[in-house]
Length: 450
Image 1 (spheres, rainbow, N blue to C red):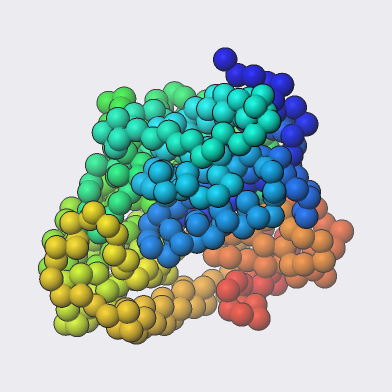
Image 2 (cartoon, rainbow, N blue to C red):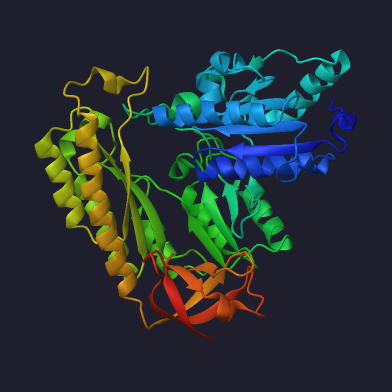
């Protein structure tokens, strides 16, 4: 039973590291606590409760998590500190030993965060002392609970968590160990959350998860059926799919998105390598021919679609000639942007058994080349739409600064302060004429509001 009195008028701070899914979950945790009487701590104000939601995708991410925990403990002396997320699952005992940490919750336990927090915080307050770094963590195979999340926090777009966990066990990745195996709620429950987002003023929802194309493991349903059901939710003007594995991005889904009411011409597809030999070393479930087919079909049915691609450089086994295969493959793909990640050694992964290690210097050089290729592709994609008319969903802005938003095909747009003055466009759809690039070429300027 939750002791609601322990939360009344307590001040809280939240720190999130990692992916959009983490941000969505943290926002949901915050809303749950606010509903129990917790209030946000003001900037510079000491909090009574601090929550850190961690990432563990790379060694750099682990280090950033430790730094964030130390900082939040230092800046909020005496606060009750809770740590959850992927790093907390993988290294629960280590995290619980960090001075100032009171409670560590693994991936299964965070679905019951409020109850765990109520119990531990009540004991600490009764004893008038720290509970001393307790941790609760199930083994990977025992992670079965699903923590629902549909929240926007301080953002305009809602993020709807439709799936969690992964069954793929790629050789370089720790995510299945951090988040457990693939699981999901029902389509009916997700449609209901989308309808609630409409009542809360939402106009755009991003579908998030770990491997969302694998939706249906728990319920026997299909991802395409979820997409079709959400497309019928009145009031939501835009849906975006955060990331889909190429082997789970069906031709049927691409065709549906091309003619749907609300699913945007915007795809994010992880490639990881443009070399079939490296893909086999990674234990990826597709080859470059399948990936190229998906890109070609999207371009055929949605010529103006934004296509983002994840690519990892410097993985074990990526000999120089294999990286050149990746570069050539990506150079020839009609995509809009590359998300480039250097490979990071992760303890316990099968990749550590693969011979040929790429030096850190070489990883940086390969990343630099791919990032330059990405910039060229993004600039060319944006340039195509200069002078055209587009519908933009504007986001909450800071007074006196340019108002930002995105077109249907995910072009970042800026409305200069002079044009935004006296006009309330927060969370509003507006038709504009797109002008040239802004000062750092990260967006197109609005030439005219219509």
